[in-house]
Image (cartoon, helix red, strand yellow):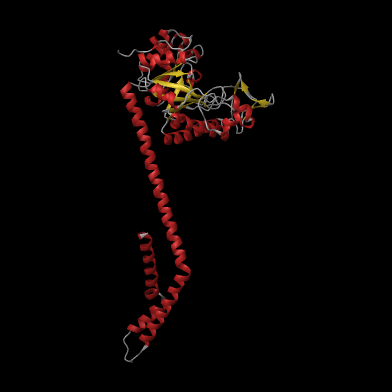
Length: 426
């Protein structure tokens, strides 16, 4: 208020100054008044009266017409200043929160010698026998991170969601809650990651058909080996997913990991999209979603990661799926390339049978990513925990650790041997 009064006084003073000293009529009269004259004159009195009369007229105009406008102008200026100030404060608070997020994350890594994780199939979270084996791994090995399904490949939500779309889809299959996560943390200090499947969702595609990729040849929504893909440009699908991610963060997870954050890996010519299927649109739809997710989830207190195909570390384009390494890494905190040796074609990296050379293949794939400028901290591969012997899985882990990288082991059944991992000292 002091500032408002100050500005008001200043502006009125300026008006008065202009009226008394700068008004053209007065300038002439003042010159005549001070001009030496041999005649006695009383014009000075007349000049004074005219100035006062003019002053009163203008003052009246200020009061009647301009003062309200002046107040409005000052109010607008003050509101603008307050708004800009609030934005600055919000920005500072946001930066502090993000710094705190990474501080806590780095502290966890330093204390626990990195992120060493396993995938837990979310459907098993309320199965005592399965969870007993997971808890044993946590208690007896150096595993300190769990990736748990929050939204699955089947389109199911595994926690209690308030999503309006969930009410329509009837897709809740509740397997755990905040208390469940807290119980896991009692075993040891844990880093918890919620896995959310994005653009592969059969329930959403069949219910909101206009949001799905269309198959013009068969005149129905597109499916690929019984997988149903949503159009990555669908605002409804993206907002639905972002809301679920926010809920999962609030549930108690430290990080949200997006899977199937891509276009179908298919050359099928009859797929119809809302937008032209080209490199620019594909990468823009994937990266804009991830960028918005990172912005929202950082404010909620969660970091963000994305699963990508392993070959993206080597392929300099987007592989036709919208995953381009150099741009996707800018919109997430971490990437988890699925560098499974069994998934590389014969001859990859010079090996006739890549699956028979886990250490060499994983090492070569990760080297490609690092050489293209991906920071070590942001590169956290998914390693193969299926179709491999204990020795093979250990070679996967060794390849990642030899490059000073964190890692997560994938097994769809969440079946892991204690001997995969370094044992904790008793």
